[in-house]
Amino acid sequence: MAITKEKKIEIVGKVEDIIKKGKSLVFVNFHGLTVAGINELRRLLQSKGMGYYVAKKTLIRRAFDKAKIEGEMPELDGEVAIAYGEDALAPIKEIYDFHKKNAEVIKIIGGVFEGAFAPAEKMLTLAKIPSREVLYAQFLNVINSPIQGLVIGLDTIAKKKEEVGA
Image 1 (tube, rainbow, N blue to C red):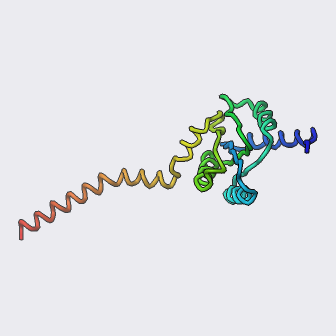
Image 2 (cartoon, rainbow, N blue to C red):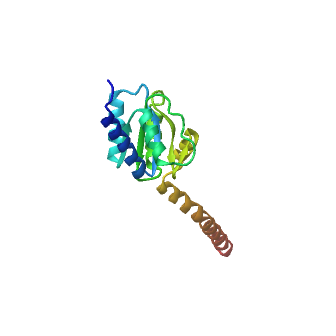
Image 3 (cartoon, rainbow, N blue to C red):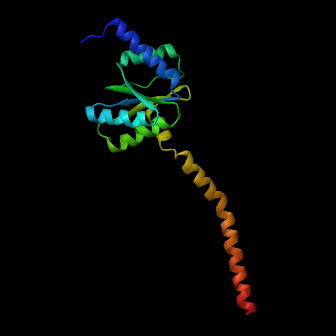
């Protein structure tokens, strides 16, 4: 069924709003994903304050042409949706986690990060960055490690002195 011109304008407007609001956007090829799978992904993203929007590729391209984003837009193959959110890495990570469970039916084909188009490889690299909490824990471990080594060394010296003195 053909889409009316008014509906196309509405869809392009919605995609333009997504481009303006989203700090990062992920282009997802969801060919073969069941309706139940799409609904599960939508609910997962919405529960975390993110969105998922499906539109025709030509309308997506039209909206991005108006947005003047740097770089070259990735090739949009298959059935395409846009995942977006206020956090720069959250949509990428959530789509990647969903992709790991459903690798045969969903694929990251690119996106927009920090105001520029990014290929799928860059988006996958960004998805593998640990969360802020994990990075804090790793940083604290790096800081704590030399101190811990010093304390263990001093404790060993103290025990040896006690053995010699006893």
